[in-house]
Image (cartoon, rainbow, N blue to C red; front, side, top):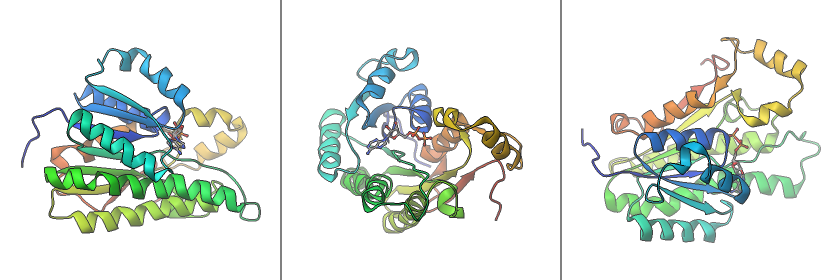
Length: 253
Ligand code: ADP
């Protein structure tokens, strides 16, 4: 197994909070250089000045405020990163939008938003890093999908579930076309992870959700981040085109 000796460069989309931020923090602790991508500039500024992240000098962090549904912005960001650090080792496609709209009420605008951010962002960011990863003959792409992409009819919305299912197919398409070039592509499918968003759910509904999970608790962002760290590591070189369920037993196949 070939070991990486340089400080790896990881791009994380949607790194302003929640899962993306937890993944970013782990990567920094592991000595990686991290590019924080998020559409929410205010969140990025808060992260930049946070206790954990601020201790890493600018030699270890980069912050790019951009919308992953903008293909030109993706291309420009990749160019900036390559000019700055000369390499891209890891891409985490995590930026996402979720809306709990019924099938009757989903508008064309909302459909386009969810599909272009969650699925389009994943496709075009992955496509944009390929040249660099192929040149290096190494790379890791990890897509943060969801239980919603496996189980379908959740309250999360048909558009959200379709985008997350689409990510799982993209994972296999990219994995197949890159196999043999040192680049692996995998997905994780979390469910019921404790993120800031959960604070907005009614306590009664939350308790019902908790009871429906076989392990009887919600997951921690860290429990997703540690799987992502493993998939990004040299040790996971023989794993590609796979999806890892992180859901407390909610979906057993
Ligand atoms: P999770 O529970 O998966 O962590 P969050 O909603 O907490 O979900 O985080 C998703 C992140 O993705 C947020 O920080 C959000 O600002 C970011 N995001 C949403 N849309 C876009 C976009 N179009 N481009 C880049 N980042 C985005």
